[in-house]
Image (cartoon, rainbow, N blue to C red; front, side, top):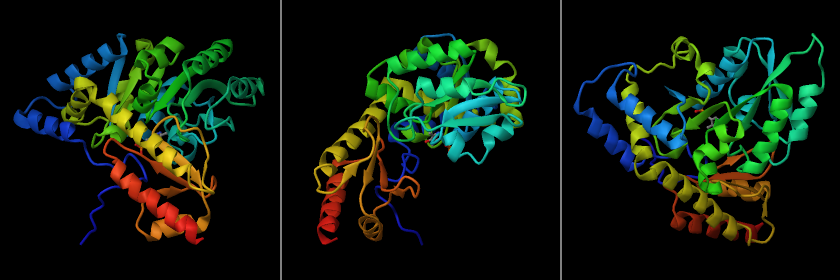
Length: 348
Ligand SMILES: *Cc1c(COP(=O)(O)O)cnc(C)c1O
């Protein structure tokens, strides 16, 4: 027997499939079209994505974010290169060494940065720290947008990073596990925070935004995508039933559902922030700019909340708790959560 979980705040990848996505899978389940992405839906989804990004880019559909990041980085690096990223970057902390593995040994160079973001001076430092043959040559800057701490790179910040990238001949790869939340938060066009500011490759997640699974890797410079299809296949990321991943993207792209889902998640985070920050003794750890809120509260309050059945992550290193909001988060549940936090706060 299992317990049904109606709502949680652990991660946007715990969330249900949104109804439009599920309906699209059922709708496109009426025929037996070609396998391995040679189907009409995959071509259609790719064309729609090119329209959305306003550029003739190369698009690949893969299963998950670890693969999207690792394979795109491997495409930009040789084994003796290095990748500059934040110390809280998913590629550094949560991918089990996959970026190093798939690139045959490219090293990650990490910087502390600020609020989960790399600053131009961090990149400058790591890019110039050593220039001798004994050190892996910096080749790529990896940025997470929105970041692992729920913050966002502004267009200005991205432009400043592009300057450093150009100065040192570095590519820019973007981990867009929560790219939709960044676009919604900045209320900009996808192009404004990608190829227009020098991003070479974007990993764009559907999984965290209402799909069952599916990420895309977008190469804005088609030349960089050479043989990437082989790389995907070798890594076990070529879905024979790709059409069902593409179908989900079609649903997300229709009527801007991807952006509406992300906006909703962002606004729920804001709603929670507003209420929780008013509780005495609770601190918000990072600027709330997308769909997650990190709070500082005592261990006791955190563990009591868990005992009561609330689902969220504590990060031992960072302290406090992380609450993530999704396309299906509701104010009613947040109100209940706030009530419990208040109650527990008053007891401890
Ligand atoms: C969720 C996430 C990913 C992808 O993780 P998978 O479990 O491999 O799909 C990548 N980057 C960030 C920042 C994430 O939050």
